[in-house]
Image (cartoon, rainbow, N blue to C red; front, side, top):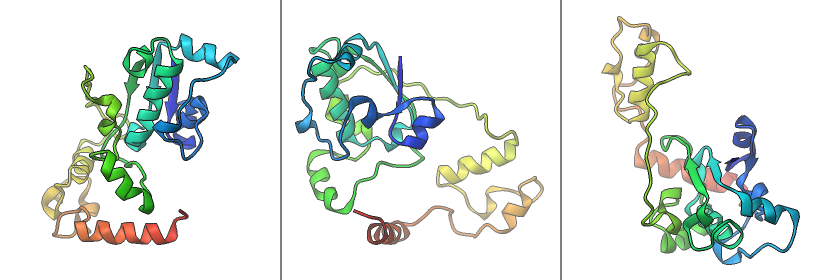
Length: 200
């Protein structure tokens, strides 16, 4: 079993490698650029793969997952099966960080994929998948705080979400009356700032 993640930090956290490192992908990899590996030691590794776990899959772009699929069809155990016959275990929280699609890539991306998320990859079409939703929270112990966090991530939190009688009273007093999620206008504003300040 191989454990992968889209970023270096996520890979370190799960004791694995980045997707790009494991498959020797360049940063600007596209499905059209994927080739069969030459005769080397690593090619034998790909042929022996049985399972790949990808953590933090919410950050994996659709085109990157298509690159993984094409690579494994060319270099994995069975070229006739999706992902070369390798069992794929995709783990992540879609409420967390989305995939990054930079300004100049957006129009091209929209013409090929419904969304930038992994589940819009061509490789996912028609797959028979088993979905497992994990419901137990391990990082927090305070039930009221967990309820408040879930309301925020579900975009349903307001000032009335947390009654002052709970341990979250301090947080409650600072909550605005309006919903605690960014409006479309705020999201567009944030994207414009990111696009001008982040390197292309």
